[in-house]
Structures are given as C-alpha cells and as structure tokens.
Length: 305
Image (cartoon, rainbow, N blue to C red; front, side, top):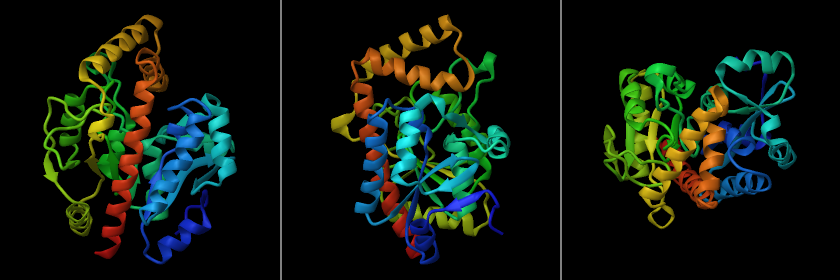
C-alpha cells in the first residue's frame, strides 16, 4: 500500500512503473552541506548528470509535511536558500515533521526510508554518516548505520565522511551484517581522498558485478542495505596531510565550542572548507558527481536483471 504521506514525482513514478533506472538523492547536502548558491547549482548538476547517464533522478525531501520523492526546481531552490533553517531530518524526527506539516532535509537514513517506500533501490550521496571520533564516551553514532542494517537500499558513496572514525564505522557495519563493497578498490575511501588504513569487505570492479550482488542479496531475502564505496577521482583527491590537519583543527574547535548532535557534521564540514581555502568543497562536489555516475550505471544494470 502507498504510504499516505508520500508524493512521487510523475517522472519518477513513470520510470518505476516502466522498470527504468531511478537514482535517489538526499537533500541534507543541499540545506546543510554547502552554502547557497553552490548547493542549488550542485543539486541541479547532479540531477543532470544522472539523466546524462541514462537514469531518472529522485531528489528526496519533506515539504509541508509531505515526503517528496522527486523535487521541482522551485523546491530545490527553496531548500538551498533556506539552508540551515530547514530541519535536518533523520528517522527519529519524521513523526514530528510530518504531523506538524514542516519542511525537512533528509539525511542518508531518511532518504533510504523514503526511497524504499517508493520502490527505489539505488541511492547516490557524498558520504554516509558513521561512528564519530570519541564515540566510546559520547556514543555519537549516526542513525545511517542502523538504517543500512534494515532498509533494502544500496548507497553509493565516497566512504564515510573522513571527519568520522572510519575503523569503528566499518566494525559497526560488520556487526550489523552490512556488506561494504569497494568499487575497483580494496581500501575504504576516506571521502576527500582515495585511501584510508582500512580494507573493505569485497572489491567489485564493474557496475554489472555490483548489480548482480545486490540482486543476490535481496532475492535471498537478506534484509538491509549495501555500502558501495566509490573513491573520489585521482585528479580531485586532496593531499592526505592537508585534509587530516584541517579535520584535526575542526575537531578541536568543535570540542571547544561544545557543538554536539546533529549540528556536529555541518559544523565540521563548514570549518574544514574554511581551513582548506574552499578546496574541500570542490572535492566534495566532484565526488558527488562521480557517485551519481556510478549509481546511474548500477541502477541501469539492476533493472536488466
């Protein structure tokens, strides 16, 4: 049965009914991930990239208490201009946002929920949330990881955001049975650069292999999502020492200023951008485009199976 709070854009609905490839996109990256007008320009460019690669984009957000799967240009502009005024919405926030008819920007977790409601299996983003550094005392662990454990959507990303604890994030995913596939790599990408000190579960080198693995998982009734780690292109990867120094400084300021909870990631990403003179934002945009291209190919191959 169709969820009573769900609105699917006609282009997305037509593609799903015709078994054509559809790629879900989140909206927190628009409202909280980048400044205006870069956020709107990037969102529209990502959608166009998906179309150019043979799939239909479905950017997801909550507008006036409605879960929108596929946004209009005006709705994307609204999210971008309002920015941090839009509520960053994870699973726990959904009942209040829906009942009070508010606007919400969907995180990875909430985008997965909405995509699954609509019947979309493939989702492209920048980086997933994960276990925050110092989580052994703060217990700060993203709801994205639990959503990956139970919702049947594949997430194409450049790894988890490198402001997080990559090793503990991988351990948490392993505990919850979430496969982590490296697209052409054995190491987990570190968002702004291609390498970390941690290996992925499996390396698959083509979109066809990845699509086949997704089909096998869900046909076998193995619940939950899959992380497809797609490294940032070589030419856009940042020097590891530069980005590590910026992250360490940003984390120190986060602690000094007492920023916690859902405000942590936007604060850190913004501060890292400032400390790198805007280079991290450029890399962020390029890795999102790269993930959109791969997601489109995987979606197309999945529809053929």
